[in-house]
Length: 95
Image 1 (cartoon, rainbow, N blue to C red):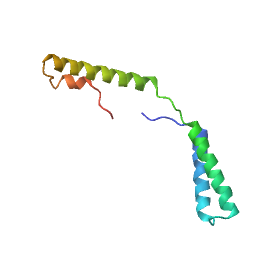
Image 2 (cartoon, rainbow, N blue to C red):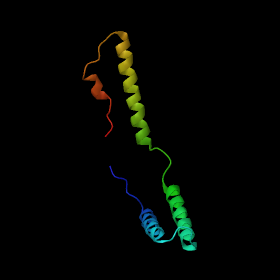
Image 3 (cartoon, rainbow, N blue to C red):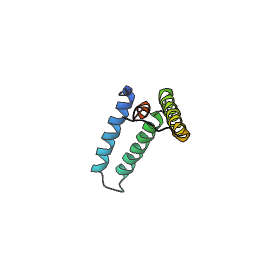
């Protein structure tokens, strides 16, 4: 499942790469180095703001379902019944 990024995200990444390459060619402490470093910082901040900070509802539902399944298996074990290998197949494994 690949997440498709918008075009402006690719443009920001491209400009950030160009600025980092330009930063490597400048002398540390020079005026151009300071300007380029400021540009890198601004581009990096812009990229951080573009990232979504929320977890999708599908992910939350999957986590909740897994937790319920684990709790059911544990409670079934406490009653005295052994858990068979088939019961563990209900818990989803990360990919």
